[in-house]
Image (cartoon, rainbow, N blue to C red; front, side, top):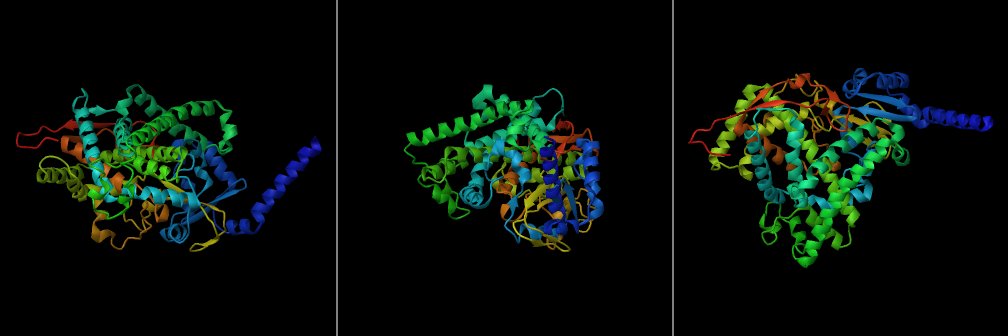
Length: 510
């Protein structure tokens, strides 16, 4: 028994020596970085509130390496290096995204290679401008509902802003992607929302514990058993909706699916993508692809789950940060309100696609918020071949971590980077900006497919709130602590005060 144990110890030591001092290990070791011991000690000693920025790496700007046992990670934050990695190579997601697989399987967010290319091609038409024009009515309806619900509360203070906003962004994504409203599932709605919120916590728990990446190990834990129950709830809704939508198309002989290929034609031709006055949704495209044999029901489910995960929580979190920054900067808030009032007057008292597009200053506020507080604050890719950065050669198979937060606050590219200044994004100011110094929606071929969808939705929600309420701060966003998470999420609920604006009779109603 002792001999067997000694043999395994010898194998582990030999493997560790080979990894660290073989050709790839020697290349990695040329890159500066802290010792493995100091990183592990930092992780063990720090709370989730202190760990997320990994400030221990700041002294090694612009590139550093970390060994976690036999696994090397290279951290990059210089736009030139990011451009080489994301633009000049076919980027693949690293194994760090594997903990999403129980929920999302290998949908658009986590798939690789040929599967990702095929899914992207199928889903691209869903987010064309002509399709988005049909979604604007949903955005406006949800934003008006949200403003009206605030008018009916007895207290002006919302004590959990993220929870409040996410209810409306989740319903919006369900309506536009699946063609359903969670209100139709009254008994299921709260259970479903709670399941999603708990699943986000489970992903953080698992992501911070590398030994739980193996599904069979995690399944043996109590949290693994709880996660299984949550997944049954989340996947159960997706499966139910898919079955109902497929049955509907069977009963209508697929007449709403026969012309789905029309959505690939002219970008601005709304009529071409409106089939018999019926709004086209992502579910239609996926079902049409399944009828052609390109997708199975399981494939449809993983894409629906992916868009629900990626599309509602990130948007809600960004809206929260925009609102808090506007509350902290009254002059900016007043300027946004003037712009909103002007477009509302021009459009006859109700938002339209055109009026939302005309909110240029609000759009700059949103972009500046995403610079300061990028919800997706890091990206992870794996090198498919050796790549040459500015100073170092990175061997194939290395996991790269791109600090979006670090890039966005780099003083070499953003003067006074901690200052909230929406006019940074005036056309003259960004004309010569490095294209990879700003990555709120990633970049390259794997950029966020729904970024125009998200921007329109955020403008609709924020404009409606600004039109109806004065925002007053309770806490300054600069003082908010953040947790290590899959997203840039505060360590405690955010609060904000909404003071109703009393409209004169001459004003238009929202």
